[in-house]
Length: 177
Image (cartoon, rainbow, N blue to C red; front, top):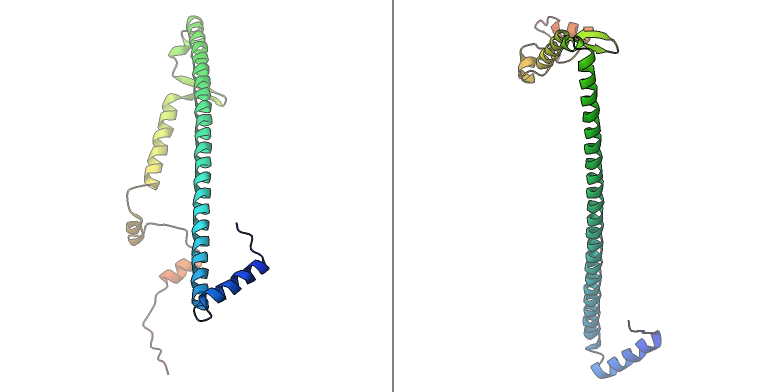
């Protein structure tokens, strides 16, 4: 920028006073100040716009790098999963072929062995049906407003609240006086 000291501004002011005259000098100074302010605001806007564009470009580059890294990780994970799946399938096929030769009678059994003992598949199916039935009752399609209107319990009520709710209320003959 232009380096203006106090002496240079004084010289410019004296020359402007002589050239323009004392009557028009305040008007010209006001106009010069507004033009200078506009120029500063315009330069600040341009600087901020350039800064925003630079930051936006940096963010785009960062986003591209992150996407590339994520894609690389994704392919590595997919390859690892595929390899592990193939190993498990190979091991399972080896185990099933060896167990089918040794114990052909156990494979036809309707029991599944767990760490807690043996449970029948019929028992598991019954438990699953019961769970689905209870869940359906809890999350039924009956709206809450209908349950509330027709007395379906929505929440626990204390004994005092039930007494107060069902206490008979007679007509009150109390007056203001």
